[in-house]
Length: 155
Image (cartoon, rainbow, N blue to C red):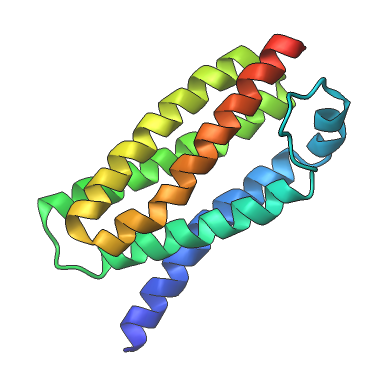
């Protein structure tokens, strides 16, 4: 049981850590974000860290469900896709907030969405629950894409 607990804590710490470092690198970005012309349905700034924390926790749980399965090529592929999408996710706020590259950030977000779709599909083949845990992430990325694209158009 100890090994599973350590694996769970690691699987949760990795995405939450990625989010925390990304948040640190883009601190103060909500001030800039709120000064931009916003599309309809833009939530208040406080919503973003709350949603992302929940999504990172669900991602970590999903990765745990995959990580505790027997070692196979499918598991290796799924966890590799997971790591790649986390790295791509880490860079999006830097491109959007720090660099102000709204169109590039949108294209990057489309790339991220595709990677998360592939990861979700790979996770689902190993654990249905892990796949289901990734769906809110895809939904949020779709919404983030809407916000990103219209911020590009309006600014």
